[in-house]
Image 1 (cartoon, helix red, strand yellow):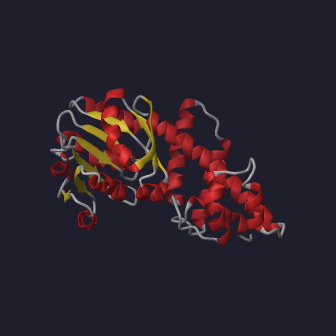
Image 2 (tube, rainbow, N blue to C red):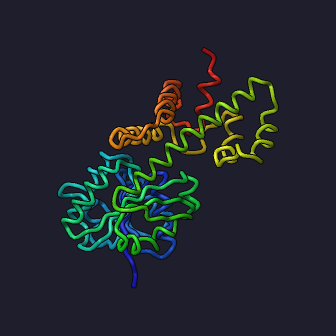
Image 3 (cartoon, helix red, strand yellow):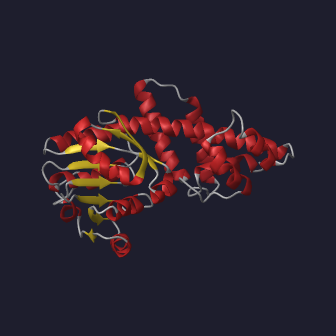
Length: 291
């Protein structure tokens, strides 16, 4: 039986993710706020572009979204022209946006009222992971809709887990971002110290990466950090958005995350340096900056 999927949001993540679905033989209909993105997508992949959200989702068994933040989700899901009002009864809605757990729970409640299922499914792996079909996906959902959507998400993932009920995916992504914040700051300080000590920094990385200091960040970002290249991943603006979500959730659940709060401020310094679109490893630049 053929499966029809709608994909709403063709940014740097959604564009290749929708492409993986289409290349796998799924009947894909896409919509993006800027129509030229949809047109470019249909020229590269098999599928159709809708002229509105309503027309794009009305016959879809699955509706995938990947947009910017909570307010974007409200815009595409709610209201008479949104996904929830126009989706096929029984459809499964899968949101890949990194957003708050609260908005996931809100959308799930609205979806259930119209006989729709909702999965919050934020991703990790960045643009490269999306393009290579190697994303990590953390899902919050009931087991049955997750099991139905899983085969489709497997087309662009290397790890895919059900973490608990709706909202659990977003909370797991918060854990991910908190961990990354501390790791990148630690690596930035280590490399900066090596530079100031006039060591051969690449040799230092080569030796310490064989021991307990090794991390994905060290393996994949140390070289570009040494070279001062920051066009290789998740932007500072987006990391600050994510950390604000983490800090808000921590205020609700009583978690103490002082390092994440401090690193959020450091990313603010990077923004003031003009690094809004630099990748997250650019924390090292604020250490290099001469006061």
